[in-house]
Length: 198
Image 1 (spheres, rainbow, N blue to C red):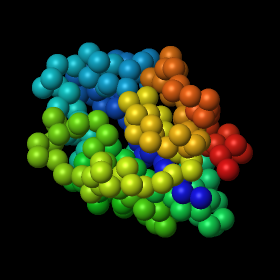
Image 2 (tube, one colour):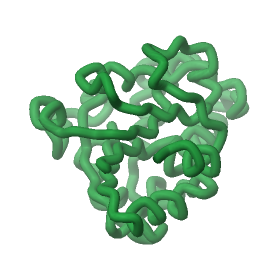
Image 3 (cartoon, one colour):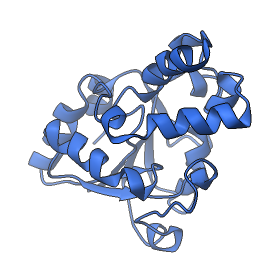
């Protein structure tokens, strides 16, 4: 079985870090549970310049390496690998973040997973001339049986896989989202994902 897993807010607690980062940089107090939009510029009411600055800071290697693991993530992914499944991490991070992202995975016992950087969100606006290691046309040639994703903005990347089972990691910014089909299931934690995933 081929499994797609998103990185931020599925494997690690990125938005929780952003909540503290926005407060430290701009005095913007938005608790994690009040991050109601996947668009962080909107969630934190930032100007364009503030948003670019925050995203640039958040993608520094030392910051990427500091993100806390989402409880149960590495345990579940390694269980799938032990069972012979193929797991690919498909992140919207730019390729400039590949090395620290790869190091984070390795340090959290996920050295066996493949890591691809796919331009899911058009983030060239904060790191100019960004490159990505996986082109869209090549991504669409890949087949997945199961996906773990938190972002409603990424659901469109599953349209070509009508039989795909999508497990949506419950986050504040996806709680009011309408799922595209019956193959989408909300999961509160990795224990639930492990139980219903395969």
